[in-house]
Image (cartoon, rainbow, N blue to C red; front, side, top):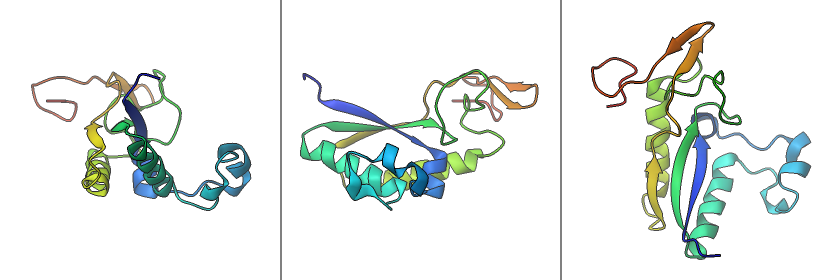
Length: 141
């Protein structure tokens, strides 16, 4: 197909909670891969990374969101690296876990800090704007 790298998204929620696929959704989510029945999210991510590596595909792991949800809207509260549900410390912990998990996998060539950093509603009517420099909680520098 002419590509040699894939970008695999992960959320802070997936890394810190490591949920199993809910039984009532297994049929839709893993119909083509029944060996994943009862497995947890990080085990499935491991299998995807391994499949990529076995096929000579480099992997960039992408912190797409904090919440385990679909991205991106102006009101999803995932424009920054923290929100009401997940702290900056949670975000950093998730990155440390992912880095440690794949540090021996040579086909994992990068880890994206955050997808589409943007203004974010962090509470009802309370918006935060990311900055580059200047200090504070919203300083991406």
